[in-house]
Picture (cartoon, rainbow, N blue to C red):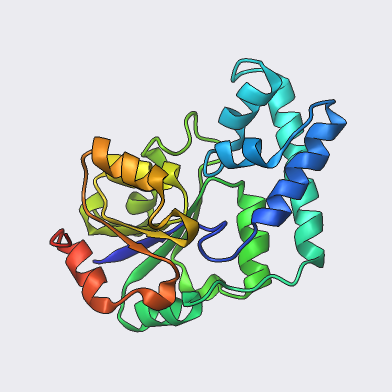
Amino acid sequence: MRTVLWDLDGTLADTEELHFQAWAQTMAAQGIAYDYEMFIAGFGRNNRSVLTELLGVDGLDPRIDDVARRKEQTFRALLAQADLQLLPGVQAWLAGFDQAGVRQVISSSGPMANIAATVAKLGVGDYFVSLMSGATLPRGKPDPALFHLSAAAAGVPPAACLVIEDSVHGIAAARRAGMPSIAVGKLAGSAALAGLLAIQPGPPCAEVSTLNDLTWSTCEQLWEHLYV
């Protein structure tokens, strides 16, 4: 059965500023200056891999879990006060896939508490057969583990999945997972994406500025691995 694996942050809704503020406040409390370039460098990765670098510790250091927890608590506090909306075209595609019998899964690097809070804020929970978090996996995107687990949760093989992502790490993970993908937002047409597609072989990847530009024909071609 055809399945769509949705990234959450930056794909379903624009949570970028909320996450940046949460990171900046949390790292300031750790005595670490944190800027937007550092935020973009970690975009799409899970907290463990990001904090290993920011804190200069190994991945087993207990400090990582504490700092990550504080960051996500800060994010959820900001989220509760935010006027968060679905990005252009998202509502139409959520409903369209649902009506067509396509299974839908959220496959996010964020912790489950964030996923649940964001989905509830947006009021879209009924569209998904599963919510999958990569936060506790040993390796985050671009490792394909989260997407493989998401396919298993939906009861389908990887080749039946179409990934919608806004980060280069997410597209890289999709290609490693053997799944066609759609790059949305600022990632579409970017040099970073072009570089990835040039050096990493994998299933086809379409690019759209917003999901308003996506067509059923493109989705069909991607699922059949015929998109060029």
